[in-house]
Length: 329
Image (cartoon, rainbow, N blue to C red; front, top):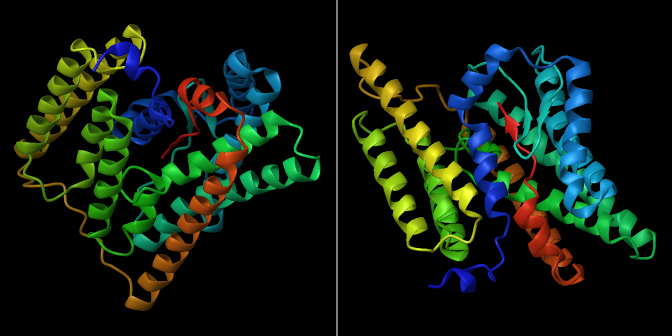
């Protein structure tokens, strides 16, 4: 495949998807916690900086609109945490990386599902409001339509049922088998996008498979990183070369993180990083399955309705250069 040909394919939010998963990685979360983010002033300042950064490509109103979508999504998690009695502060925005929210380790599965569901639920509500306003104003504002579309896309991608995405946090209360559905969905997305950088996502989701022997995870991570680098050198990537370099560095860092963490567990005599929390009753699990499927179907239906209205070229441009909201949890 020639590089020039590959560049014509729509990215479908490829870079956004990769950064979303990276930002949700527990490894990055642990590193960022030392910075003690979360004060209101930091939230406001970081929002303003991110709005300016996002507005470089499609104007200030687009930057403001996207930041509002990200903020509402993040506040869904914050509200859910406070309803469950946790003390938490507002999100901190990181340009092109999303936003960070720090939460404690959940002792039970239903609480984690509740907090994970809050973001996509409130985020989808905001995206629907924006879409309704676009109709109510005579369908004249392309920026309003685009902000609504990206809001839906962000929440839909976050609903892929595999950790560390929100969908993984929700589906873990239903059953451990659900992550295999998430793996199939991620595989389908990868086959469609045909972009080597997606292997970074595959590296990060290895953490969701707790039954994997400790020696295997760093090995698979390293192999995926090498394959990504080889494909990029062969010209299969349609990102700028400097983004490829960043991805290669990140893949190496994550592989070393896995190696260090699993080496420590091995020295402590921990055979695997298993989630031993008990599952709730079948009725509770069925309830969360209905909640999850309902929101997933709604998000899918809305984005299908929106796509035909998008101006030619705007969808590809926005998804290529704008990175969707992320929640560091």
